[in-house]
Length: 211
Image (cartoon, rainbow, N blue to C red; front, side):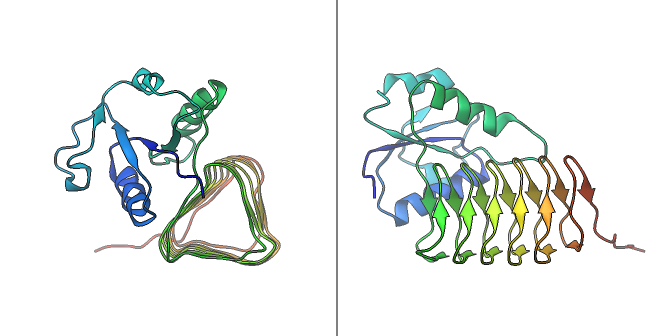
């Protein structure tokens, strides 16, 4: 494990969960970059708060690792753009793995991957760079996830699911074995996906009717 100090980008809910995991992993978080006020989130108390993206350049790319704490919104390129900008300046993004996540030793995790509490990643799976596997999500055997993908809390990808880049799988959804998800496709929360999606396609779940 790399023990370089960490600078966390973002001060919202996603960043706060990552910070909690970083603390559990005994990583030294030396600063948080957030233009917004983070004082109401007690987890940030006592940390050095930077307000401008360029403040990161105070630290040499040789001396720190970055963690991207910007939450992911479907089809928003903000998170990807931030990561690619700092990578182009020689910075490296740390992977953040919750201590209680179950990761097969036969799975491949690439740079900047974030895996939250209770998630399971089984043998033969590859998680693409900067992807997020959220709380209690299950990635079954031999899946291939493209970079910058998001798998929501409690979602289940059955065996041999392959995705392109920037795929969004909503909370509680299920994807049956062998499905392919094209770049920028979306699976809505609670959906059960039984056929492949092309680039940019959306699978909508059944809607609840409230009277």
